[in-house]
Image (tube, rainbow over all chains, first blue to last red; front, side, top):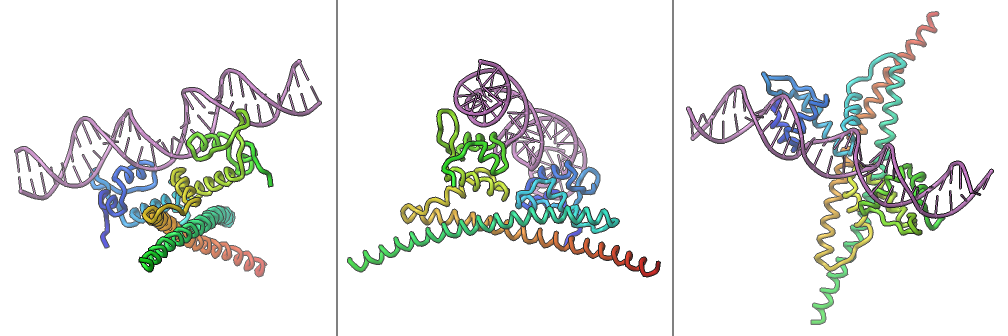
Length: 135
Length: 135
DNA sequence: CAACATCTTTACGTTAACGTAAACGTAATG
DNA sequence: CATTACGTTTACGTTAACGTAAAGATGTTG
């Protein structure tokens, strides 16, 4: 349970280059503190990076991911703000749920191809058995 | 159940520009036939486009999507080819299943933010009730 | 037959998300 | 104390996935 992290520690942990992390800071998606000139990442900053990379795996743009992350913090404001916020959340949810359905269809397609393949392989093995019986 | 489609028909149906479709052909992801100089898309070609756009929504690159699509057709070859093919399928599956897990985590995070938000809104409404009682 | 509508090719432009390289500080280590 | 490890900034390069614009062919309609 370390308190802080260097750039290369995070780079190693998440399997990205330091350049990537510096790029995220440059664009404002990360805000490490400094020890002199060196970047120091707190646990929350590390978490941000983890969320960014998760978003990336989902195929989200950095901006989209940042919007998501910014939502995680805050359920505050007046009634109007809350309602607007809720509708933005609903949009995001709808989008992500569509992705979910797309993913399921794709995976089920892939699985059926896999089964066809395994059937074909089973036939080969069957032939081997027959050859053995004959010989 | 039309047999063939023009470029703008498909563009309208799938809400992309003709340029996008031409680009996919240029890169070899689509192979429409021609009537003179004009592109003609058969139903299978239209399906290909649909799969490409699904892959895009999943955040896959065109190359990744094309690899997926190429898998759908063929469970043939000799034993070695089948085994190699099966392992490629397994890789793809693992990757997609990871996405699935990432998606679920993200969605559940989002849902909990949504609930917090609705709680906060409920409080506002509660206050309105109290004000009414008093007045 | 003139004016759209729809299509074509060619070619240069654009954005996101980094990669790569140069040139330089600092600190620990053999 | 020289080298090795790790960090910094600056800046130009790269790739994918189209956008945009120009210039022209073809067909159809008032």
